Image 1 (cartoon, rainbow, N blue to C red):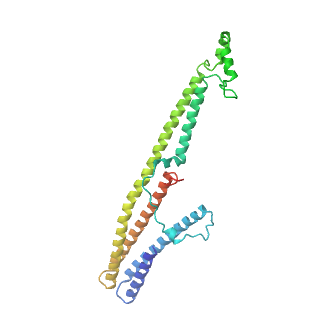
Image 2 (image 1 turned 90 degrees about the vertical axis):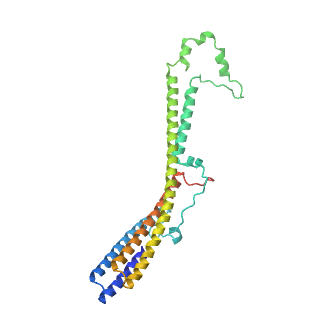
Image 3 (image 1 turned 180 degrees about the vertical axis):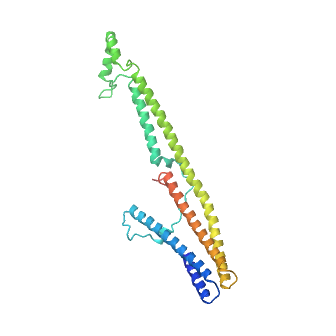
Length: 276
Protein backbone atom coordinates (compact mmCIF):
# COMPACT_ATOMS: atom_id res chain seq x y z
CA UNK A 1 0.00 0.00 0.00
CA UNK A 2 2.84 2.41 0.81
CA UNK A 3 4.46 1.76 -2.57
CA UNK A 4 1.18 2.38 -4.39
CA UNK A 5 0.61 5.58 -2.44
CA UNK A 6 4.08 6.85 -3.24
CA UNK A 7 3.55 5.99 -6.90
CA UNK A 8 0.28 7.95 -6.97
CA UNK A 9 1.95 10.91 -5.30
CA UNK A 10 4.73 10.79 -7.87
CA UNK A 11 2.16 10.76 -10.64
CA UNK A 12 0.38 13.71 -9.04
CA UNK A 13 3.62 15.71 -8.87
CA UNK A 14 4.38 14.96 -12.50
CA UNK A 15 0.85 15.84 -13.59
CA UNK A 16 0.93 19.13 -11.70
CA UNK A 17 4.20 20.02 -13.42
CA UNK A 18 2.74 19.22 -16.81
CA UNK A 19 -0.38 21.24 -15.98
CA UNK A 20 1.76 24.24 -15.07
CA UNK A 21 3.54 23.84 -18.38
CA UNK A 22 0.22 23.71 -20.22
CA UNK A 23 0.63 20.11 -21.44
CA UNK A 24 -2.45 18.68 -19.67
CA UNK A 25 -5.81 19.97 -18.51
CA UNK A 26 -6.88 20.63 -14.94
CA UNK A 27 -9.17 17.60 -15.20
CA UNK A 28 -6.12 15.35 -15.31
CA UNK A 29 -4.80 16.89 -12.10
CA UNK A 30 -8.17 16.40 -10.39
CA UNK A 31 -8.26 12.73 -11.40
CA UNK A 32 -4.86 12.02 -9.90
CA UNK A 33 -5.72 13.96 -6.75
CA UNK A 34 -8.80 11.77 -6.39
CA UNK A 35 -6.70 8.61 -6.66
CA UNK A 36 -4.17 9.91 -4.11
CA UNK A 37 -6.88 10.84 -1.60
CA UNK A 38 -8.69 7.50 -2.02
CA UNK A 39 -5.45 5.57 -1.58
CA UNK A 40 -4.56 7.58 1.53
CA UNK A 41 -7.99 6.80 3.00
CA UNK A 42 -7.56 3.10 2.32
CA UNK A 43 -4.07 3.14 3.82
CA UNK A 44 -5.41 4.72 7.02
CA UNK A 45 -8.17 2.10 7.22
CA UNK A 46 -5.61 -0.69 6.91
CA UNK A 47 -3.44 0.97 9.55
CA UNK A 48 -6.43 1.09 11.90
CA UNK A 49 -7.05 -2.63 11.42
CA UNK A 50 -3.38 -3.35 12.00
CA UNK A 51 -3.46 -1.38 15.25
CA UNK A 52 -6.47 -3.33 16.49
CA UNK A 53 -4.80 -6.65 15.71
CA UNK A 54 -1.57 -5.52 17.36
CA UNK A 55 -3.46 -4.53 20.51
CA UNK A 56 -5.26 -7.89 20.55
CA UNK A 57 -1.90 -9.68 20.34
CA UNK A 58 -0.60 -7.55 23.21
CA UNK A 59 -3.49 -8.70 25.38
CA UNK A 60 -2.86 -12.34 24.46
CA UNK A 61 0.77 -12.16 25.55
CA UNK A 62 -0.09 -10.19 28.68
CA UNK A 63 1.49 -6.92 27.58
CA UNK A 64 0.25 -3.35 27.50
CA UNK A 65 -1.28 -2.41 24.16
CA UNK A 66 0.39 1.01 24.14
CA UNK A 67 3.84 0.72 22.65
CA UNK A 68 3.51 -2.97 21.77
CA UNK A 69 5.03 -3.83 18.42
CA UNK A 70 6.02 -6.84 16.40
CA UNK A 71 9.38 -7.35 14.71
CA UNK A 72 9.28 -7.40 10.90
CA UNK A 73 10.21 -11.08 10.92
CA UNK A 74 7.07 -11.86 12.91
CA UNK A 75 4.87 -9.87 10.54
CA UNK A 76 6.31 -11.67 7.50
CA UNK A 77 6.41 -15.11 9.14
CA UNK A 78 6.24 -17.98 6.70
CA UNK A 79 3.39 -20.41 6.76
CA UNK A 80 4.11 -23.57 8.80
CA UNK A 81 4.94 -26.65 6.78
CA UNK A 82 2.49 -29.46 7.54
CA UNK A 83 4.38 -32.77 7.71
CA UNK A 84 3.03 -35.85 5.93
CA UNK A 85 1.65 -38.81 7.80
CA UNK A 86 -0.04 -36.99 10.69
CA UNK A 87 -1.94 -39.77 12.52
CA UNK A 88 -5.64 -39.43 13.20
CA UNK A 89 -4.99 -40.23 16.88
CA UNK A 90 -4.11 -36.57 17.44
CA UNK A 91 -7.83 -35.85 17.21
CA UNK A 92 -8.25 -37.49 20.63
CA UNK A 93 -6.71 -34.33 22.11
CA UNK A 94 -9.64 -32.22 20.98
CA UNK A 95 -11.75 -31.15 23.98
CA UNK A 96 -15.02 -32.10 22.29
CA UNK A 97 -13.75 -35.56 21.28
CA UNK A 98 -12.23 -36.29 24.68
CA UNK A 99 -15.41 -35.13 26.41
CA UNK A 100 -17.50 -37.44 24.20
CA UNK A 101 -15.13 -40.31 24.97
CA UNK A 102 -15.40 -39.62 28.69
CA UNK A 103 -19.19 -39.67 28.37
CA UNK A 104 -18.98 -43.11 26.74
CA UNK A 105 -16.78 -44.45 29.53
CA UNK A 106 -19.13 -43.03 32.15
CA UNK A 107 -22.12 -44.60 30.40
CA UNK A 108 -20.31 -47.95 30.28
CA UNK A 109 -19.66 -47.70 34.00
CA UNK A 110 -23.33 -46.99 34.66
CA UNK A 111 -24.28 -50.12 32.71
CA UNK A 112 -21.93 -52.12 34.90
CA UNK A 113 -23.47 -50.67 38.05
CA UNK A 114 -26.98 -51.43 36.81
CA UNK A 115 -26.01 -55.02 36.04
CA UNK A 116 -24.33 -55.41 39.42
CA UNK A 117 -27.53 -54.54 41.23
CA UNK A 118 -29.02 -57.84 40.10
CA UNK A 119 -26.99 -59.57 42.83
CA UNK A 120 -27.21 -59.33 46.63
CA UNK A 121 -24.86 -56.77 48.14
CA UNK A 122 -22.45 -59.17 49.84
CA UNK A 123 -18.69 -59.25 50.19
CA UNK A 124 -17.24 -62.14 48.19
CA UNK A 125 -13.80 -62.12 49.79
CA UNK A 126 -12.58 -61.37 53.27
CA UNK A 127 -9.54 -59.50 54.53
CA UNK A 128 -7.15 -62.36 53.73
CA UNK A 129 -8.41 -62.69 50.18
CA UNK A 130 -10.44 -65.85 50.91
CA UNK A 131 -14.19 -66.33 50.98
CA UNK A 132 -16.07 -63.80 53.02
CA UNK A 133 -18.11 -64.95 56.06
CA UNK A 134 -21.10 -63.18 54.54
CA UNK A 135 -20.93 -65.46 51.52
CA UNK A 136 -20.92 -68.51 53.79
CA UNK A 137 -23.93 -67.24 55.72
CA UNK A 138 -25.86 -66.87 52.49
CA UNK A 139 -25.51 -70.54 51.60
CA UNK A 140 -26.17 -71.64 55.19
CA UNK A 141 -29.62 -70.11 55.17
CA UNK A 142 -32.28 -72.72 55.58
CA UNK A 143 -34.91 -73.29 52.95
CA UNK A 144 -37.44 -71.63 55.24
CA UNK A 145 -35.36 -68.46 55.28
CA UNK A 146 -35.92 -68.23 51.53
CA UNK A 147 -39.52 -67.35 52.11
CA UNK A 148 -41.67 -64.72 50.53
CA UNK A 149 -40.30 -61.96 52.73
CA UNK A 150 -36.70 -62.78 51.88
CA UNK A 151 -37.47 -63.09 48.18
CA UNK A 152 -39.08 -59.67 48.14
CA UNK A 153 -36.04 -58.17 49.82
CA UNK A 154 -33.64 -59.48 47.16
CA UNK A 155 -32.97 -57.41 44.03
CA UNK A 156 -34.38 -60.16 41.80
CA UNK A 157 -37.91 -59.40 42.95
CA UNK A 158 -38.33 -55.64 42.82
CA UNK A 159 -41.11 -55.45 40.28
CA UNK A 160 -38.73 -54.88 37.32
CA UNK A 161 -37.16 -51.73 38.69
CA UNK A 162 -33.58 -52.90 38.22
CA UNK A 163 -34.36 -54.26 34.77
CA UNK A 164 -35.62 -50.83 33.81
CA UNK A 165 -32.52 -49.20 35.28
CA UNK A 166 -30.27 -51.46 33.26
CA UNK A 167 -32.25 -50.80 30.10
CA UNK A 168 -32.02 -47.08 30.72
CA UNK A 169 -28.26 -47.32 31.31
CA UNK A 170 -27.83 -49.23 28.06
CA UNK A 171 -29.90 -46.62 26.22
CA UNK A 172 -27.70 -43.86 27.62
CA UNK A 173 -24.63 -45.82 26.55
CA UNK A 174 -25.96 -46.10 23.00
CA UNK A 175 -26.67 -42.39 23.01
CA UNK A 176 -23.16 -41.62 24.24
CA UNK A 177 -21.68 -43.88 21.57
CA UNK A 178 -23.72 -42.15 18.87
CA UNK A 179 -22.66 -38.73 20.15
CA UNK A 180 -19.02 -39.83 20.22
CA UNK A 181 -19.24 -41.11 16.66
CA UNK A 182 -20.81 -37.86 15.50
CA UNK A 183 -18.13 -35.81 17.26
CA UNK A 184 -15.34 -37.85 15.69
CA UNK A 185 -16.90 -37.48 12.23
CA UNK A 186 -17.18 -33.74 12.82
CA UNK A 187 -13.51 -33.62 13.76
CA UNK A 188 -12.49 -35.46 10.60
CA UNK A 189 -14.68 -33.17 8.48
CA UNK A 190 -13.17 -30.02 10.01
CA UNK A 191 -9.65 -31.30 9.39
CA UNK A 192 -10.51 -32.20 5.80
CA UNK A 193 -12.10 -28.79 5.25
CA UNK A 194 -8.96 -26.96 6.34
CA UNK A 195 -6.63 -29.26 4.39
CA UNK A 196 -8.70 -28.75 1.24
CA UNK A 197 -8.72 -25.00 1.82
CA UNK A 198 -4.94 -24.92 2.22
CA UNK A 199 -4.45 -26.94 -0.97
CA UNK A 200 -6.70 -24.68 -3.02
CA UNK A 201 -5.32 -21.50 -1.47
CA UNK A 202 -1.78 -22.56 -2.35
CA UNK A 203 -2.74 -22.74 -6.02
CA UNK A 204 -4.65 -19.48 -5.77
CA UNK A 205 -1.67 -17.74 -4.17
CA UNK A 206 0.62 -18.82 -7.01
CA UNK A 207 -1.83 -17.57 -9.62
CA UNK A 208 -2.30 -14.28 -7.76
CA UNK A 209 1.46 -13.76 -7.49
CA UNK A 210 1.71 -14.08 -11.26
CA UNK A 211 -1.08 -11.53 -11.61
CA UNK A 212 0.76 -9.10 -9.33
CA UNK A 213 3.97 -9.45 -11.31
CA UNK A 214 2.16 -8.87 -14.60
CA UNK A 215 0.28 -5.87 -13.20
CA UNK A 216 3.47 -4.35 -11.81
CA UNK A 217 5.17 -4.78 -15.18
CA UNK A 218 2.20 -3.15 -16.92
CA UNK A 219 2.45 -0.20 -14.54
CA UNK A 220 6.14 0.25 -15.27
CA UNK A 221 5.55 0.18 -19.02
CA UNK A 222 2.61 2.58 -18.78
CA UNK A 223 4.60 4.98 -16.61
CA UNK A 224 7.47 5.00 -19.10
CA UNK A 225 5.14 5.54 -22.03
CA UNK A 226 3.28 8.28 -20.16
CA UNK A 227 6.50 10.14 -19.35
CA UNK A 228 7.40 10.00 -23.03
CA UNK A 229 3.98 11.28 -24.03
CA UNK A 230 2.95 8.08 -25.80
CA UNK A 231 -0.14 7.28 -23.69
CA UNK A 232 -2.68 9.28 -21.79
CA UNK A 233 -2.85 9.72 -18.05
CA UNK A 234 -5.96 7.56 -17.87
CA UNK A 235 -4.02 4.54 -19.13
CA UNK A 236 -1.39 5.03 -16.43
CA UNK A 237 -4.03 5.39 -13.71
CA UNK A 238 -5.80 2.27 -14.92
CA UNK A 239 -2.52 0.35 -14.74
CA UNK A 240 -1.87 1.57 -11.20
CA UNK A 241 -5.41 0.69 -10.11
CA UNK A 242 -5.03 -2.79 -11.58
CA UNK A 243 -1.74 -3.34 -9.76
CA UNK A 244 -3.17 -2.09 -6.48
CA UNK A 245 -6.23 -4.31 -6.82
CA UNK A 246 -4.10 -7.38 -7.51
CA UNK A 247 -1.82 -6.63 -4.57
CA UNK A 248 -4.82 -6.36 -2.28
CA UNK A 249 -6.16 -9.68 -3.53
CA UNK A 250 -2.76 -11.29 -2.95
CA UNK A 251 -2.81 -10.07 0.64
CA UNK A 252 -6.34 -11.41 1.08
CA UNK A 253 -5.26 -14.84 -0.18
CA UNK A 254 -2.26 -14.77 2.15
CA UNK A 255 -4.52 -13.89 5.05
CA UNK A 256 -6.85 -16.75 4.14
CA UNK A 257 -3.87 -19.12 4.21
CA UNK A 258 -2.96 -18.04 7.74
CA UNK A 259 -6.58 -18.37 8.85
CA UNK A 260 -6.86 -21.86 7.35
CA UNK A 261 -3.62 -22.90 9.06
CA UNK A 262 -4.93 -21.73 12.42
CA UNK A 263 -8.19 -23.54 11.67
CA UNK A 264 -6.25 -26.74 10.98
CA UNK A 265 -4.37 -26.41 14.27
CA UNK A 266 -7.66 -26.04 16.10
CA UNK A 267 -9.25 -28.93 14.20
CA UNK A 268 -6.32 -31.18 15.13
CA UNK A 269 -6.71 -30.31 18.78
CA UNK A 270 -3.56 -28.21 19.08
CA UNK A 271 -1.35 -29.04 16.12
CA UNK A 272 0.23 -31.98 14.34
CA UNK A 273 3.03 -32.65 16.82
CA UNK A 274 2.56 -36.23 18.05
CA UNK A 275 5.17 -35.98 20.82
CA UNK A 276 2.98 -33.89 23.12
